[in-house]
Length: 207
Length: 334
Image (cartoon, rainbow over all chains, first blue to last red; front, top):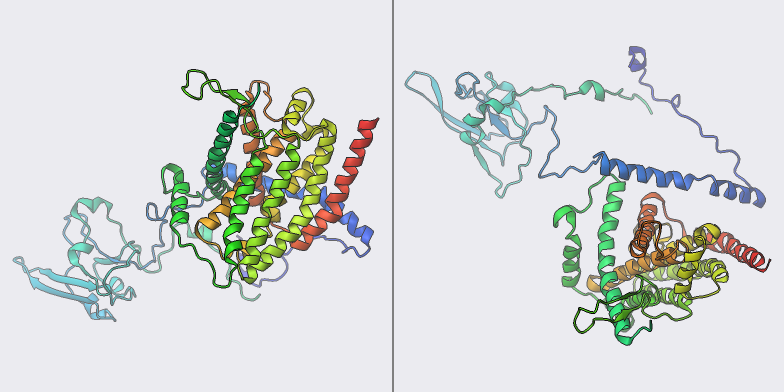
């Protein structure tokens, strides 16, 4: 898409294509002729061909639109703020959280609560960490403020639960140590979706 | 070989069992075909590829509460679905579904029994079938009027106008083939096409008109005025639930099969052997094609308004059918 074309955001009628429908018949013989013309034009068979083509496509080329949802899921946008994940350091496998407490401070719905202590190496260690998902509004401030990219938003968006206050513990959100190689980095806020260039469109100014 | 009572009873049981099973299976096929044409998968979860979906639907229909509305005419309300289902199966009694066969003699009790291709080979076969299917329209008509529901009333009124419109076309369009064959028995139609070309090619106008009339007769999509959801909720079936509604459904699918069989026997060469295909396979393929055509059309075309249906049937199709009959008559005389 050229820049000139991209800058022109005035949606007008320049792209409309007028159909040549001819005159609406008024005399009954003209109406009759129109009926006969339309009958033998074969438009009905075009409709039949379209559905048959789609059937062949879906049966033999696998062009089906059905997503068998609980079994297969569509990828979500990297900007999507779903249930939080706690990431690990790739080198050591230790969790990234340094216990700074910024996420707890910034949380506007007060749903994060954490407790820390010094371990034997005089290093901050997280002893308690819970997120109350009954209160969490998924604003994403905790992930934004985290200096270590330790708390991020993951991709689990099915958060229906039996209780309103369903707490999530640190260990539940932490990447399992055996799945460390599958750990996904969080692209962060403002991350563009994959293939964003293909999906770009002009924002129309006026209709 | 003379058909015995036992043979006819066996044939009737075969028709009942097979057609009601196929009618149930037809709902599955319809959902699958429509799904593929709309790039969906259709029923997938009950059984492999959703094949057991009929079973689930059947259980649902049988266990649903049977509701009769307060102001409904209870007797007619209860009777109407039975009319639809019964006439659909009675119509099939005069239709040749499979070729004649004799039960092999090593089978005990029934061995050696001759089973005719038609349960009742009456010499007015085609008239009987069309008459029975027309009588089946009393089901929707009475159901719509008995249920004290405005959508039902509209559905019943539409049944009446549809009935009045298409019946002329079906009758007149089938007249030309009857004139050529010189018999009303479907078996004679079959033996005619064993010696001559298919009537579909010698009578193309009658074939198209009969198909259109058949679609209207079975309430299939271009003419599904009686129960079009977008307009009249569910038309005559609005207040029906459970197995009563299921009987309407079975009746409709049995009618579809009847029309498919009629088209296959009258116009498409019946159950004669075709090249390398044995007769029974040929007729099954032909019936399946016409059945598929009905689903195909449903996926492709929008339906017409009641006034358009009347306009089409009375002002367009009926004159064409009459002209076709006249021309056929002249050709036969000359």
